[in-house]
Length: 250
Image 1 (cartoon, one colour):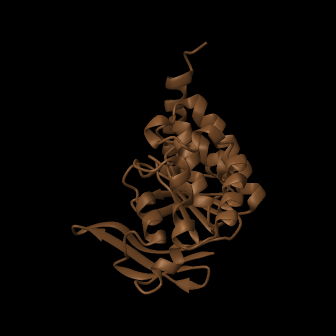
Image 2 (cartoon, one colour):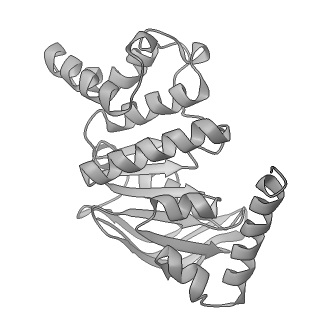
C-alpha cells in the first residue's frame, strides 16, 4: 500500500532519515516506535506529503507522491495528530463534514456517512454541535478520527493520537480504535512512543533509532528475540517507566 524507496530527509544539515526502503502492507496496522527524535513522525509526514524527501520516491497505492499528485493522493489518506487538529471556529459536525462538502457530496450522503461515523466512533450526538473547546479530550480525538474517516480513505496515518489523554480515556479509545481498524480492514500507520500501545495495535512493529529501522516484526519478537542490544535497552526502559508509574499503586 505504501512504498518508500531510497528516501532520505535532512533538517538544517542534520540527517533525520538516512536512505530508507520501506514497504507498508495493505489492511494491517503498522506501528512506528522509538525514542524522541528517531524520525518516526518525520516518516509519517513524508507519507502524507507535509514534508518532501531530499531523495527517493514515495508511492501510495500505486501512485507516486509528487507536487502534481499530492492533492489527489491525500484524499485517499486520513490523518490524525496528537492534538486532533480540529478547527476551533467549527463545530464537531462542521469539522467532520468539511471536506465532503468541499468535494460536493450531496446532503443525504453526507448525513448518512455522519450517522455511520458517529455510531462507529461512539461519539455523543449532542456533541456534534459543540465547538472543540467545549469537548473533552477523548471527544476531540473521536471527532478527529471521524473527520479522518469521512471520505473512507484507504490509509489512516496517526501521529501519537492518544499521547495527551489521561489513562482511563486513553484505554477506552484504544479499545474502540482497534475494533474500528480491524472491522474495516484499513491500512493504518501509527506513531507512538508507548511500547504497550504499540503491542495493542500493531500487526507489525517497526522500532527506529536515528532514522534507521532497528527491528521489524511481531511485538513478541521485540521482547523475546531482540535484534541488537538497543532493542533490549528500549524495552527495559519502557518496563521501568511502567513500574515507576503503576508499581507502587497497590
